[in-house]
Length: 80
Image 1 (cartoon, rainbow, N blue to C red):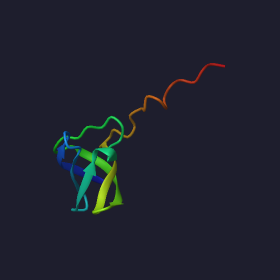
Image 2: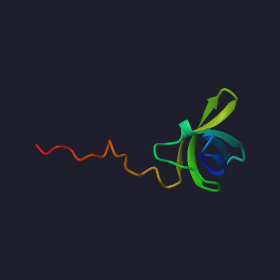
Image 3: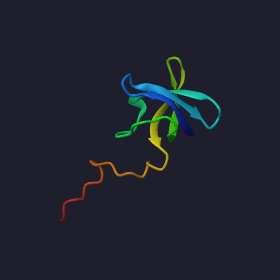
Image 4: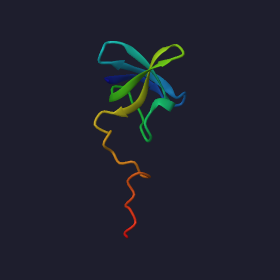
């Protein structure tokens, strides 16, 4: 799903995303993809999971950043 960051407190590690469906989703820092930092009004993509207190955002990435290489997975293979 796509959405927009409404609030994110990096010190406390949580915030809220307004989804394109009009609902608001809780996001915890553990739900961010590696290396992602959130700022107010960032466009993001995310999955919706059921949390203890209702739906929450997971696998959160800034829109357009999913194709960014992951350092450990994109190492060149050893020549044979």
